[in-house]
Image 1 (spheres, one colour):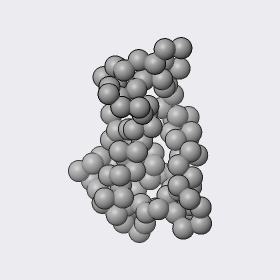
Image 2: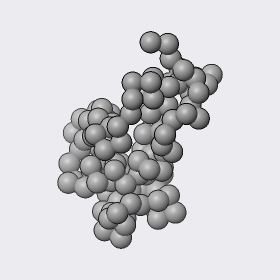
Image 3: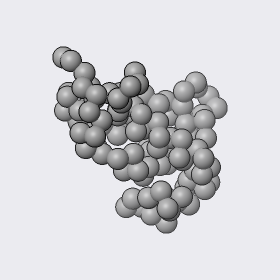
Image 4: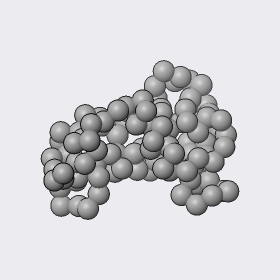
Length: 112
């Protein structure tokens, strides 16, 4: 399948992934990035074509990039940190738990 570079065709903006990441990490355990991505896909299914979308001029999948943007924003606001027990993993912070409590149905970027 040829990979498209029309990232504008991707159905979700990165902020939609903020709350799912916090909910996944809400158990306080370290979770690998790959597991988090898969669990997000369970809630926000994508077609094979959508999964193959690439950022124009970059060698990165749009989905992976949008989840990475959510990770970066949550780290920036100290809602999550890199995991301690495994490489390429994250865990929630006390601040992240507070955000999740205040906005159980969906945190937005301004809620961080």
